[in-house]
Structure formats: C-alpha cells, structure tokens
Length: 153
Picture 1 (cartoon, rainbow, N blue to C red):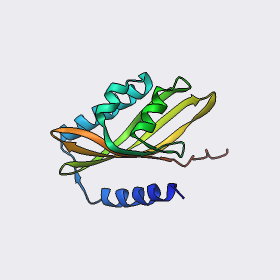
Picture 2 (picture 1 turned 120 degrees about the vertical axis):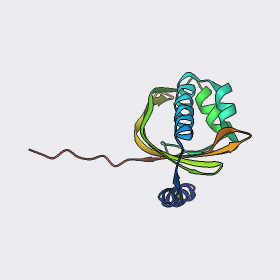
Picture 3 (picture 1 turned 45 degrees about the horizontal axis):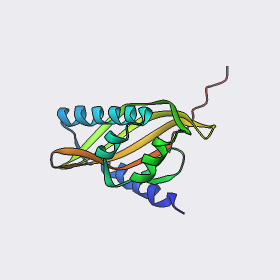
C-alpha cells in the first residue's frame, strides 16, 4: 500500500520532533513566511515560485490521500479543473536540525477538483532542507485531524 511509507515516515518524523531543538526566531520567521508564500502560490497558480521552493526530489502525501512528486504537484496546481477556495494554516511548530527543519501545523483546505469538492482540517508535516542558503521543501504529508463532536446538552 502506497500510504504506508508516508504513515511510517510521519510517525518517525513526529517522534524525532520531540527531541529536536527549537528553531531560532529567524528560522521560524523564514519558514513560516515560506509556507505562507507556498499557500499563496498554490492558490494563485504561481508555478515559478513553486519550481524554486520545491526540491527536485520533493514528494507529498496530500490531504486527499494522493502521493505526488514535484511534477505531479505542479500539474495539479496548474490545472484549470483544480481550485482552492481556502488554504491556510496555524499552530505552527518548527524544530531545527542544522540544515534540516521540520514543521508541523494545522492546515485547513477546501476546494474543487473536476467539480468534486474536497477539504477539511489536516495536521501537516513538512520537511525543509537548506541548500546554498535557501530553504526548499523535500517532503509534505497531510493527515486528517479527528473531528471532535460537540457534547449534547
């Protein structure tokens, strides 16, 4: 099953997350800005920016359960059939390991693909690598968050 490697990777990354160093304020600011710009680029179909920020070996386990490489993500974002209505995140946490940083956050995604609605709330893990002074994303994994039911009165 294709999802299993991403699930195992997410468990390993999250377990390492508790042992990493908190990122410096400048790294937190840089990567949070980069993530925000990434979301804007995805909404606005800014393929040029995505080409730069996604590493050639980029792979994503998407919030929809797909596994995409860089070319696949660029094709999806470029497609006129694919549209984000909402894409934003909060609760960002970042750990730094030299030239590697791991970000977790709560991301809300809503949109349509070929007329079909998709979306929800997800816990995202993103792995960044700093190359030649610039951060690139090498891995992104979205996992659905459990919906909490409201207590009945």
